[in-house]
Structure formats: structure tokens, C-alpha cells
Image (cartoon, rainbow, N blue to C red; front, top):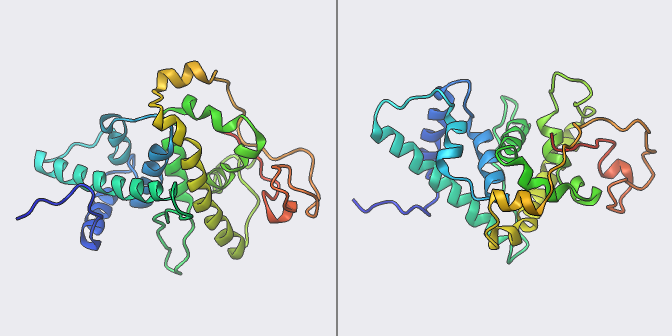
Length: 246
């Protein structure tokens, strides 16, 4: 049998097999949606993160494979999916395109996007200092708002939760999140090309603790220009949710 190329996308059966494994691996691991977001963040970021560092986050720190063959099989599926995401994002450097996140739907056919965003932010926090550059301006910070909004939608702390959305608003934010993913990938492309390691990134970008996401004390009028500098009316843009990397 001809070996499967590492660049070959997963078949539906392989995708289901990986999803089933993740669902059964344990509560400390990720499901297929959060895994997709997690890998996307690692691929977008400026640092090269080794599999030995990030794979335990996916299936859980305490998970033990029954056999070496099983471990090799699951790792290969993850590597192939990594390359699928990576290849799609690389295309966005040349053509106006996006990577469509893997979003699970509920029984009503609604994709919520929370697990994907939570996975993405877990990926950011693997090397949080190296992401500091993206938070140097409010305009750039605004690009991260969709990821944070979905990640904190059901946060136990009410100060971290965004205001509730209509179904239409959710769909719009999901589209915005996919577009922001392309922007983040392009933003860090010079860093990846330069081979900026985590240690070099820390030297180049002084680390500063960033405050947690909180609602703005001053309520902006819905028809006023959005504070992120997009030029859009506030109600059509950030809608009062200012968030920062924790």
C-alpha cells in the first residue's frame, strides 16, 4: 500500500476517527473543534512550537496510549490536519482567501464557535509573550476581539462575558473571526520568515502584563465611530467589547 502523504487532507473517515479519539481521550484534552482552533493559533503565531510541546495539550497531559501504533496513527492524523490548515493559510498570502474553521453544530444545526475560539486562545498562551506585538495598537488589538469574545461568551466571570448576540450577529462574528485569522497569519509572516524564536521575540518585544478583558466604563453611542479605528459605526463593529490578552 502506498504511504499516505503528510500533505494529504484527512478523508471524512479519518476526520471522524480523529474526532472520536479526541472525544474519548479525556476531559483534560480537546475536541476536534478546539483542536482545529488550537492548531490554527500555533500556525499563525511567530514562534515554532514543537509537537512534543503542544500535542499533550490536545489529548490531555495524563493520557497514555495503549500502543505505539495508536500513538503514531493519531499523531499522523494531527500532522496532516496541521498541514491542511497551514497550506490554506499560506494561500492567503497570495490570494484573497480564508481558512474556514472546523465548527461543530448543535442539534439545531447552529455552529456556536466557542470551542474553536477557546482552542485558539490556548494556542496563543503556549508562548504568550511572543504575541505581544499584536497588542501594541488598538487597531491591531481589535483584530483579536472575535477570538476573545467567543472564548469568553460563557465565562463564569460576568465582567469577562460579552453582551448577548442575536443569531444573525453570531453568524457575522464567525465570518469576522475567519477573516481575522487570515489577518493574524499575515501579520506574523515576517516573524516566521525571519525565524524569530521565542527567546528572540522576548528580547525584541518587551513583555508587559496585559489587563484582562473588561467592558468599557464609558458607553459609546451605537451610532458613534468605533473606538478600534475601523471607520465603521460602533454598532456595526466592536459593539462595546474591548478585550485584551490575559
